[in-house]
Image (cartoon, rainbow, N blue to C red; front, side, top):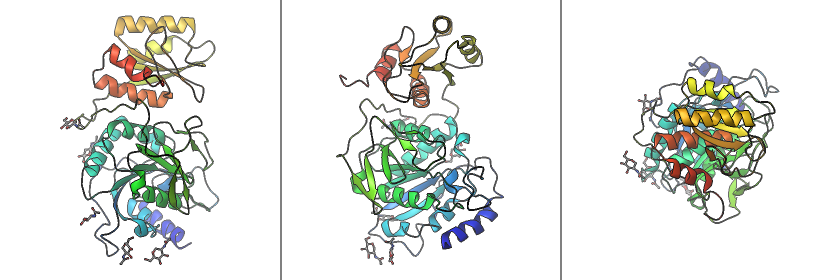
Length: 367
Ligand SMILES: *[C@@H]1O[C@H](CO)[C@@H](O)[C@H](O)[C@H]1NC(C)=O
Ligand SMILES: *[C@@H]1O[C@H](CO)[C@@H](O)[C@H](O)[C@H]1NC(C)=O
Ligand SMILES: *[C@@H]1O[C@H](CO)[C@@H](O)[C@H](O)[C@H]1NC(C)=O
Ligand SMILES: *[C@@H]1O[C@H](CO)[C@@H](O)[C@H](O)[C@H]1NC(C)=O
Ligand SMILES: *[C@@H]1O[C@H](CO)[C@@H](O)[C@H](O)[C@H]1NC(C)=O
């Protein structure tokens, strides 16, 4: 109850903060306080906003609240147990709902996280994030960071003001995982609702309930028992996970890639409209294992021939593999939003046709 009161009080004063992303600043807060204990791991928390920093008018309100109302110091202060497992320090990277995160912000975030991971005195990194696009940021970090140390992305489904808010325990579990040597060399992880999941495969499956981040096919990496991580497997990384070096990439460098949806009688003109608007690539969220209508395929073929548009087929089904198509590339196991960032990064890196095929279609077990 004490922490909820604290959150309510400070939330009201911080709610005046601008909803526009604050200029990311690498200023670390907290590690200098009297709680510091040299035998605990130093964990840096990058706060980006979202529900975990959200504030609502009443304790039974779990939708329609203001995301990103609370600052990173408030989040850390609300969970004093963080000091039992780590020396936490916070970076207020942004304070927005996750739908306001952009490719430019992700480039900046991954550059700052990499710089932090490169410091020998930092043992792990946690990123707090809204849940709606959490999987996009977690995936982006997974394919753009070079790291062995634990990196955990965490959010919450209920605002801090809700009865049974899940933010404080999720943050404590995320920091505990980031502080655990057993969590190294597992890629970026998503920790929510007592589960530890691979950022590469995990997706948000439920719009409202706390039990939402899942990967039905690949499963979880582990479980939190009494707020301690229990891993099901030895450290392992996703097969075929690429690495894109964006250390020196300019904020506006990533090309426009748009996502189209497949359905009966889809309008083939939408693809050309996206390209006319500047799209260098398209993700086609195909039916079944990536299928697209005949008139739609004809329109796509024309765009490839006339504009060199890069086309990747994904699927509107929840899981499964999308193989090579008559035009463009099959997206393998990637869902549309993850295929989109992969294509943006590959286009930026200047991949040719052969490398694109290998990138997207090499995720089958025979690789
Ligand atoms: C410092 O941390 C270690 C390891 O967690 C613990 O054993 C020790 O009691 C802590 N010291 C203080 C003064 O809290
Ligand atoms: C955290 O450590 C303090 C002592 O430093 C102890 O009183 C408290 O019970 C611990 N909390 C948890 C959750 O372990
Ligand atoms: C990225 O972060 C730096 C500070 O590290 C800041 O100066 C710059 O404006 C940021 N760029 C964007 C696109 O947010
Ligand atoms: C944690 O950070 C402090 C400086 O802030 C440093 O003195 C200490 O060595 C670091 N601990 C580890 C285990 O790297
Ligand atoms: C990434 O690129 C930068 C130069 O832009 C280089 O200094 C750095 O070593 C590269 N990192 C890796 C892991 O290749």
